[in-house]
Image (cartoon, rainbow, N blue to C red; front, side, top):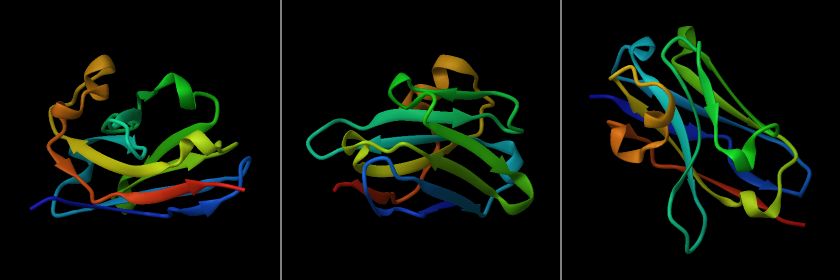
Length: 127
């Protein structure tokens, strides 16, 4: 059974940085594309970004472009979300999700296309 676990969340001041990790167990990690999503209080969960199986394609939603960076280390079964220049509006629970259909582009932004989800990690940006 595939299991995803996020870590690295916390409280940070505006302009600060955090690096989230998503580690997979129970599956062949390099067979999965991984997406990051977030859900702010009172709002729907939204797409943050995604990376394909071997890291050849990486996608970001507009609100985080230029500030967030996604990478993966298949040897460590881990995907990272480096978040810089954090804003108050980045406050949310951040989730990673995995898909095994080798999707590209637009489809990686669709929550229903993902097969496995982590429990989430809280990121709070506040002065």
